[in-house]
Amino acid sequence: MSQTLDIRKLLKSVVAYKASDLHLVSRAEPQIRIDGRLVALNLPILDGKMIEGMAYSILTEKQKKLFEEENEIDFAIVLPDIGRFRANYYKTMGDIACAFRIIPIEIPSLDQLNAKKIFKKLIKREKGLILVTGPTGSGKSTTLAAMLNEINETEQRHIITVEDPVEFVHSNKKCLFSHRNVGTDTASFSNALKYAMREDPDVILIGEMRDKETIEAAMTAAETGHLVFGTLHTNSSAQTINRIIDVFTGDEQPQVRAQLSTSIVAIISQALLPRIGGGRVAAQEILITNPAVANLIREDKVHQIYSQMQLNQLETGMVTQTQELLELVKKKVVSKAHAVQFSNRPEELLRVLENVVI
Image 1 (cartoon, rainbow, N blue to C red):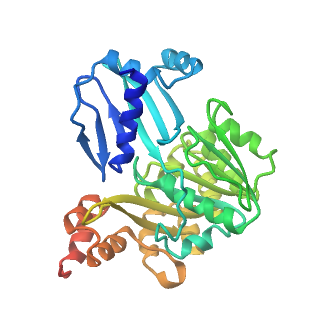
Image 2 (cartoon, helix red, strand yellow; image 1 turned 90 degrees about the vertical axis):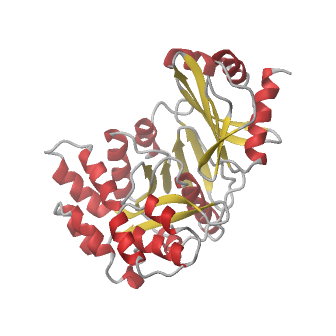
């Protein structure tokens, strides 16, 4: 059996088992992630040569050269009759290793994700910065894809996405999409954003706000009349704001706080929890900037934002993670144990769960 067939069969098993990821690491058998947990496939233990043969069978010559120079590479690949995957190759103890994540070809709607009503209001904004945050594998890309899909179905706009690599590929419904892949279509996120201003965008998606230049460009774009979506690997609204501010030097921070207070529209911080009975469900904390929140950002009182999120929620559309987790437990969607495990404020959650009868 050829090595090419091997990798395709392994990726087929990801689809067959409704898994999210495939891992190929030497000295271990292939493993897939189902509902957030790694499961070993009943296959032989791999060595570096076996993985190299499989991994190289789906790379172009240019990609091979890049990987050999950098010792890591990110790319997306479509395998006919199997699916679309985001791949990362890296080295471990001198051997090549691979991580593949499946990217659904069908883009979910906000309704299919059971997204709150506020999401459809947010995508109607003409300008500003909307961030979806959370750890790796928390469904950020899926949430953003659903939001862009809603714009695609309801507005006539030019949407530029800058990703490494491009994940969800949108067909043009009412909108025009320009998907840009970092590394092949543009040198970097910050470069793409610099030139995006000349490409007449209405909406810009930034796959990851990794560095100061990208964050600066995103805030500027949001201030100058564009709706900008971005992601960060942070777990809460306050942590997200602090992370952005901390990227800048002390003397730059007052200006950045002022910029953020006017440009940020919303922060959606999410985690994916195991669902009772199988599958996973997103728990989302939602911060919507209002005059009070903007004032706290500007005055460096980010720690007070959490209290602000708990006020007048029917009017603001805000929700804390604790409230979201409490609802999921009450509705018997997730277990108490998992809710506490994934909580940013476990002590607070345990207090409110004391009176919940399951």
